[in-house]
Length: 337
Image 1 (spheres, rainbow, N blue to C red):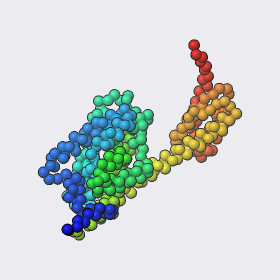
Image 2 (cartoon, helix red, strand yellow):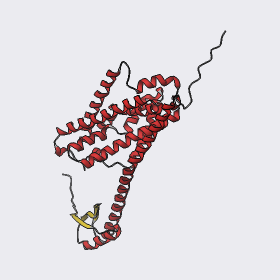
Image 3 (cartoon, rainbow, N blue to C red):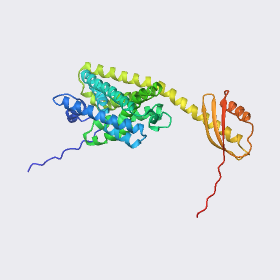
Image 4 (tube, helix red, strand yellow):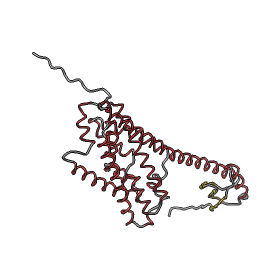
């Protein structure tokens, strides 16, 4: 009686060659179903833009997260880096072109959606969903690199494909573009530039980290032709160059943010020391360039404000203008009927 040898489970880290046809079918929009898949992409992208735009304007984090899951924009980005790793210029250009169409579609749609909303409901200071996306720092780059690597690993394995939703939440693609559209509609070019920088950071990080992971997994070894190898090398060089470029403004933004935090901490400490011996307490202290705005609450007399201004100028190592606001302490009592 012949013995049957059970199949050996695949435990290796590398890319499974048998999975390549399925991988290509998932990644690249081509063949008989091209029109249908493009339609699906555009429809889902439009719906995700509607959800994300109004989720941002209403300050609803849960709604924005839902839009991230619905949005299909990560697919052509992953397809771009996969095509580069495989040395396919045509596939890379098609995926890149679809990404550009998606970017312009989201920005234009968000612009129109914000156009029908009263301007008074759009805030670039109190709406956390907007403010968190217009001043990106290095943390955004580190997050995007990790998410890009995770996404590439997930798409290389059929058995964990369901985890892609988590990557879509971790890395923000459509919401920053929606903020770009909203900002342009409001004439806030500075905010639009900041949100676009966040998107470019995420986009380039996906390309670089995703491509590197796919190479490590062995997808690049399937490229035999020398021309394909040259395309892969040139593509990765462009990805690295792009990430280095966005790192410059991200570093500047991060340094400025850290400097502001340190200045606020130093100024707050000086105000607290100045209030010692009084009944007053610090409410808020904010340092903006050469202006220090401080709000204190209490009762009784305060020391001369000029004394505080001198202390702040020494602590911050620059001349400052002090805006001091005092609030009377509110004491009340109530009794049950």
